[in-house]
Image (cartoon, rainbow, N blue to C red; front, side, top):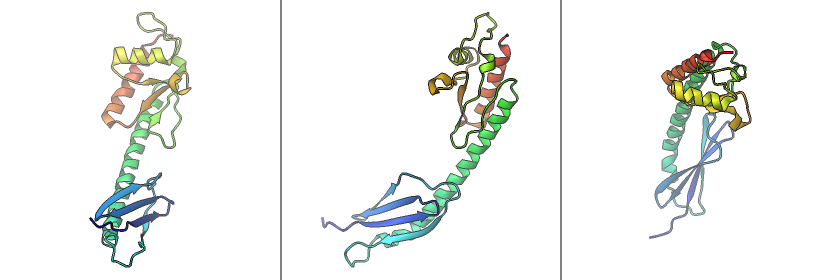
Length: 187
């Protein structure tokens, strides 16, 4: 087999992110750099970096296809971003309806850290006192079948961690049950 020189395509975006396509022996390998195209970033240029030989590189034939794939990827990223924002906003609205629960709006994660400190120290219907968020999460799991993570694991005592990377139905169900759980606790 003849060793062909490697060619490289770079797809530049206005967010300084790059994706590199390496073509070796007629097979294209897409190597994604440390950052993906961010929301709002749009591929603006496909640049072919010539090998040292004067042969017509197979990478030139792939450039239009690569540009199309980047546009498709951008569309998918924007749709996913909009979907996660809608889920985040729905979860925040549901949490805001629960008395004495506060929750900051995250900037980029798909987790919420609602503060439930007002409910720590209250008693379950059986009289057992909920001493921390860990016990609250266990009670929520055992009695309401909702799995949340205590904030103590993340240096946020009195908080719980809730992922909104779920279906809208599951988010609504989980936060509704969280509200029922907290309502069942007696001061």
